[in-house]
Amino acid sequence: MIDKALSGDVRAIARLISEVESETPRSEEIMRAMYPHTGRAHIIGVTGSPGSGKSSLVSKMIGTLRRQGKTVGVIAVDPSSPFSGGAILADRIRMQEHSGDPGVYIRSMGSRGSLGGLSKTTYEGALILDACGKDVVIIETVGVGQSEIDIVRIADTVCLVLVPGMGDDMQIMKAGIMEIADLFVINKADREGADKVAAEVRLMIKMFHTGDGWIQPVKMTSAATGAGLDELHDTIEGHLKHVRSSEEGAERLKKRLQWEVEEIVRRRIAKITESAWRERREERVIEKLLNKETDPYRVAQEVLDSAMGDFRSGQLL
Amino acid sequence: MSDRKIRVVVAKPGLDGHDRGAKVIARALRDAGMEVIYTGLRQTVDQIVDTAIQEDVDAIGISILSGAHHHYFKAIIEGLAARDASDVIVFGGGVIPESEIPDLVKMGAGAIFGPGTPTSTCVKWLEGAVAEKRKAE
Ligand code: B12
Ligand SMILES: Nc1nc2c(ncn2[C@@H]2O[C@H](COP(=O)(O)OP(=O)(O)OP(=O)(O)O)[C@@H](O)[C@H]2O)c(=O)[nH]1
Ligand SMILES: [Mg+2]
Image (cartoon, rainbow over all chains, first blue to last red; front, side, top):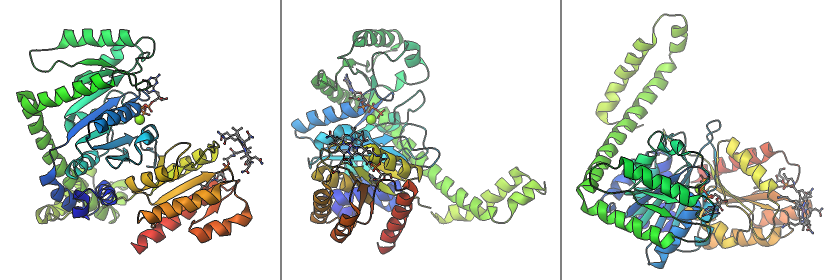
């Protein structure tokens, strides 16, 4: 299956992503097999508030890339219901014009409880697409509010999509949303007010830009008419060149690798301690807590003690 | 500990614009914890099959109220077979005469649910069918 996927077989790629997304026992083996083949694709993140036109833009971006003969993989994340864990994944509706094109692979993911705008395994999905030969991988995040900024860790280029009529500019300035952008896209430029948003954002960039390095460009687009898409494409390419050739870019890559290792460690710890806790719970520990025969701190230490053996053996399940 | 969610495409093939049933079902499946890839109206058979393969779904749910069910069920089931994906469950609902259901089932449709079916019936059936399918894998 892994070899089939690496040679570009769509069904095999789709299966691998499912395995990794479901965190099956095979997922580490899969990712280790992918690893040597990764690092070639340009990973582009598209983020912005709900309904700002991310999916429509992605569809247009795919069109431009395909005209240049590049293959494209897309991972589109929509929110999972916190109540049922289920999700209605509808980003794909806007990208249906590329259905049937063998150079385009689109995959929808539910955020599955993650709060950073992606799901826990979105990055792995992107790496699989990279390893399996896609020239460009585009990740569409959940429509962001103010704290969903995981995309900045995994994308080479982050596009933040803004639209006219979004409310006042303090909203944009709050939290860390402005800071994660490598470039701003003012979409729905066919509508009234886009110029004003662009001017405000440009002013803000000018006021807060520190030192030298990359200055965030501001591009106006209309995913409805296709206006501005070629310029957007050139700007994104320009940013990739910058990332691949500058000190800043090298720093970013190092940070990503560091984060990757931390993330794997965190996940292993969580898995092992969760299963140790499950076992412990069966010993009527909750009743003991209720009767004040023990306290939560002591129980926590017992859980960690019993997990120690599993850490050493590298036990995963 | 792995958490393998049930993934389903809910599709409306052809020009049929009745999408209430499809939306109701999509929502019910989501509320049962499934991931529903909703592709919107006016899908071609190739689009539906392509989506199912790229999204690695367990099942395709088709909603048809236009009377063209025979054609679309047949084309989708054949389309999956041509892509070596006959393990994907095909089921559906809409305005489909009782008398024509056996025909669709013979073709390979898992189950058909007509107007007035409680959504919980559809959900239960699909959960059972997916469990069955995964056991066979
Ligand atoms: C509402 C309605 C409309 C609305 C649609 C609004 C919309 N956005 O959906 C409007 C007014 C636009 C409309 C238009 C037309 N309609 Co109309 N419409 C209906 C009506 C009254 C109800 C349909 C409905 O929404 N039901 C509510 C939903 C929740 O029920 P449901 O879709 O049946 O879904 C249930 C089950 O079938 C099942 N199910 C459905 N899909 C799926 C999928 C899966 C995966 C599963 C598991 C289950 C499942 O589960 C659901 C819950 O129980 C029906 C008559 C009827 N009683 O069915 C006619 C009906 C469907 N329409 C009909 C017709 C002819 C038309 C028009 C062609 C009329 C015209 N001449 O202009 C147009 C065509 C529009 C188009 N582009 O396709 C005919 C179809 C005849 C046929 N099949 O041979 C019907 C049957 C009326 C009739 N008796 O003549 N219509
Ligand atoms: N006028 C106009 N409408 C647009 C433009 N881009 C997108 N839209 C419309 O805006 C709505 C939302 O578009 P999507 O592409 O689904 O937006 P999104 O950001 O992906 O939405 P979520 O994924 O739900 O957060 C749709 O009705 C689009 O047709 C644009 O440039 N101009
Ligand atoms: Mg979207």
